Image (cartoon, rainbow, N blue to C red):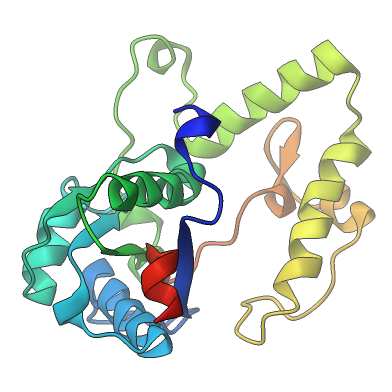
Amino acid sequence: MSQSSLQRGACAIVGVAESDLGLVAEGMTPLDLMGQAIHRALEDAGLSLRDVDGLFATTSQSRMPTLALAEYLGIRPRYHDGTNIGGCSFMSMVAHAQLAIQAGLCEVAVIAYGSTARSLGRANVAAPDLNPYESPYRPLYTASSYALAASRHMHEYGTTREQLAEIAVAARQWALRNPKAWEKEPLTVQDVMQSRNVSSPLTVRDCCLVTDGGGALIVTSAERART
């Protein structure tokens, strides 16, 4: 995707919302949390489900999330995208939504995510797909893959353990600006480095928190946003 294909100012995010967050999903599915966030985001945008003709969604708990979500919402979008590339999926989806709108494939796009990982617990989290280049060497969990990348970064660039810990500290500082944040206390570099080791060089405080929750964005053309 070239930057020139994304026309600056052509589209706008007109609605943003979260579902309930934390340990909130007993008896619920990721679709329930996505739906909750979508309805709130549409209300924020002054739109309704009738306006939605583009659907972008992914979750580790569903192999075909956009099809399932469209059925759950009772809509038939003209365009949908369920590409999963991990944590940066949704940044890419914002660009994909803009390209789809510019191409006339849809007019109002919803981007959504939902997870019930906290309520399900570790035993029920979906097993990762096997990778022939990694699985034989036993990086069985997501943290192990990131630990390998972190180790290589330290080797290549001289990155220190303290510098890696600053990432978790900064993430917590931003999270504390959200009243819905699961953790309520600030984090220090020492807190990160002295916490339980998970996969060297990463500790438990380097890893993302596991919670239930969902979120949604509404993207449309700048022209429509102004009307």
